Length: 181
Image 1 (cartoon, rainbow, N blue to C red):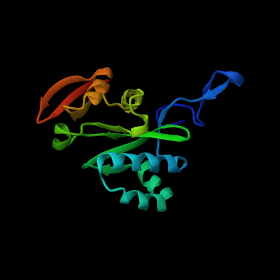
Image 2 (image 1 turned 120 degrees about the vertical axis):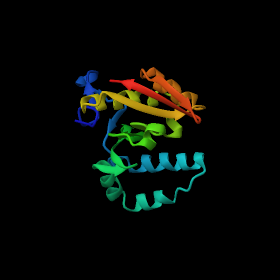
Image 3 (image 1 turned 90 degrees about the horizontal axis):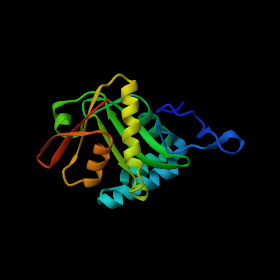
């Protein structure tokens, strides 16, 4: 099973011979996505104008890089789970689940963070990623999620609202939405 409950092996029942390729899904980071992950993240760095130097280190020791991301870890002062959104053999994006909220995360960051690589935006992937993350969080016993975005990020606002996010507050250019699971 993958991280979002899809059968492993990248297939679902149906179609010719009873098996068809699976659609995109959340899964733990895997070395099988090496080239696609690196290309997608390089595209994001180029778009943001940030340095891709960290990707050279990641590429050199990709197995170690993935192992560190696939296991439990702490970031932002809380336990996090990192999941990659994949449609084999392509890496499409990342979801970060923050299992608790700090005062800083209550203001900006929330329980869920996500991104879609530039080449896969505008295709509904962010909406599906957030929905899958909500399903996973519900299965883990979480009952309410805070999701934040910049107030001028109309695409993220639509993604959150499509996933039943209710706007709680808009302040300091940050929109704070709650999703009840």
